[in-house]
Length: 375
Image (cartoon, rainbow, N blue to C red; front, side, top):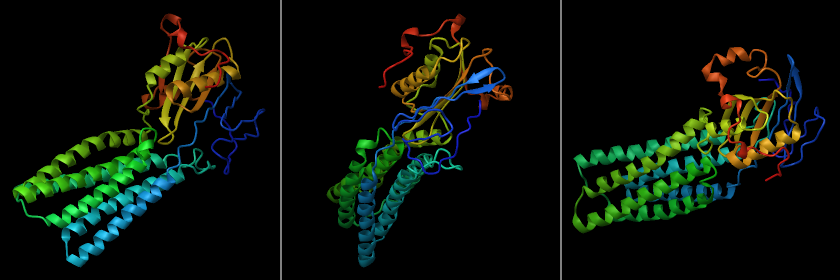
């Protein structure tokens, strides 16, 4: 790809970019740039579109950490007072909730840090790492509960029924209340979804403890506790698997689940005047922002800044991709930047490529207008 020489800005807001070396300014919330680079007879034009900042869940994280920390302290104090190993063990488990919330909270703060000359995307990726850490932590903790439940099936033992049920009931309230704080953002932000899943999973486990404890008091069946714990642990593990898989994929710069890379490639290929699309890469900059880079071959010449703005707007509206960099090539179809031929031989680096069948554009009706209205 052609190199875009951007000045480093250490203190700029996410939606207000001022690139002094260009002949135009970027309006806040509508950051677009067009770049003209001459390389071996090709004119390369880059165009950028930025998505909006993630919602602020700082207050939700603060309340959640306070509630769960208070619960842990109460369990430790009361557990030491009555010499209850069950309470101390549950305090250790709930401490993982606090850690998970702190990780997600820290990431939600770091993701807003401005870009620098070293971290040109800022620290947006920390939200992905936090989601992965939370999913891993929940998987390990729940897996440990399942393991303990299997062991208890072989040797059922009586528990401190009344105390354990009372603590679990409080745990339901604390964990459920914390989960509800993140419910509104669970579909839009993987980091928030991780916090929600973690707390909802613990609420379900606590509910199982209450149900099993009550049933054991009524029936005397000691095997109910491990059976109920095992069933709920498996349910939580199944729910966590999707979170773990998504966060791991994003950390490896995989295409976000909500984006269909093949559909994006076909749509770009269908644009009027495009002879070929290659070096198409799509990845997540954070748990709320997606990015795309692509080379579009326009044999007839550069289509104009308005056309590129329209492409960026349509990619944001159609495919949830807010940060777009497009390189336009006007020479031989399949050409590229110096040295690009080497990367084309490397399937891991070449990206996706698309060509219209028989030279005809695909889905012409879906192509944007040259001057589309902003969504």
